Image (cartoon, rainbow, N blue to C red; front, side, top):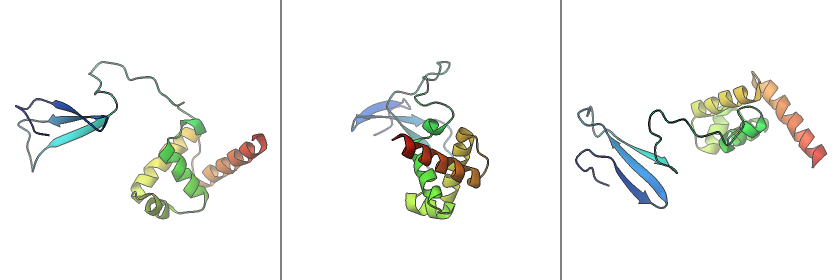
Length: 127
């Protein structure tokens, strides 16, 4: 992709839209371009966000990555080990865990492990 007169260009590559955003006149060190990958175009300012696909709270609110982090934590791995398994940093694992705590209404790892065990037991009874 090349920049054309500072105008955003949209190209379809492999079914994904890639929008290259350029900030003219704000070149600090190197090139300052950001590629934003989305299934849909960037939402214009003032337009409301689309409705959530997932609930805000509870197990169904967790993303696939958050669920994977929880599964590994429930296996007894420490955050560094979870990060190594998932090829992400420990800080990223901690961020996912913070989101999980908020969504599940727990405040520490022990409560998370108890909630996980309770959920697993209830799923085993029902299915």
